[in-house]
Length: 66
Image (cartoon, rainbow, N blue to C red; front, top):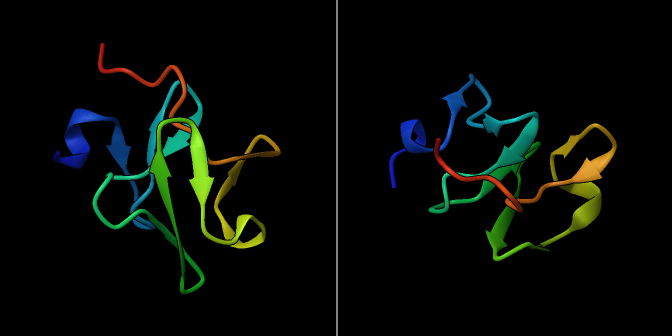
C-alpha cells in the first residue's frame, strides 16, 4: 500500500480523497504524537487525538481509488 494509491500525501502524512482523511494503512495517521489506525470504517485509538476533517473523525468509508 503506497500512499499514492489513496490520495495526495501532505507534510503531515495524511492522505486525502474526496475531502476525507485516511491513513496509509500501515502506521495510521499520526497527530501530535498519537496514532489512529483504521480497520473497515472504525477508528481505533484515542478519538480525541485523531485527525479530524470537516468535524468528523477519520474514516475510510467510500474511499476507493478512482
